Length: 116
Image (cartoon, rainbow, N blue to C red; front, side):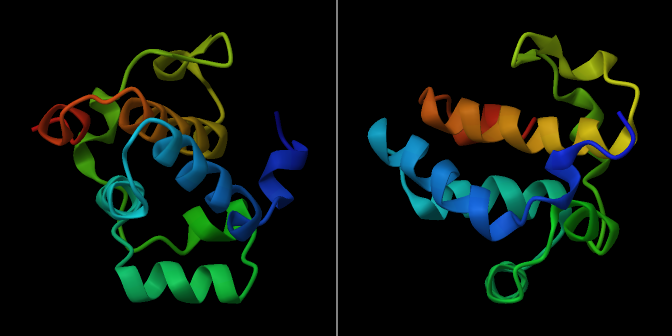
């Protein structure tokens, strides 16, 4: 999947969709931010900076302070593909983030989402 167009998509362009998905299910921006910061190691201020700078997803993950070591515990299907079987490391990280936001939107308990 090298060169997939999602890699050059800005985080700022997908972030509002994540928040909207959560809000439609009675959850909020804070919970979306919690799962993203848990996954990437970014702080709230870092997320704001990434959004302001229109950072693409490849750079977003390349510059992430530290991928959570429990990220490999994220399993399931996103867009018909099992996240644990995705071979491209960048695509897998993007799908991990999608999966976490999906779980927020489905109303799972935060402890479960954060693999606690």
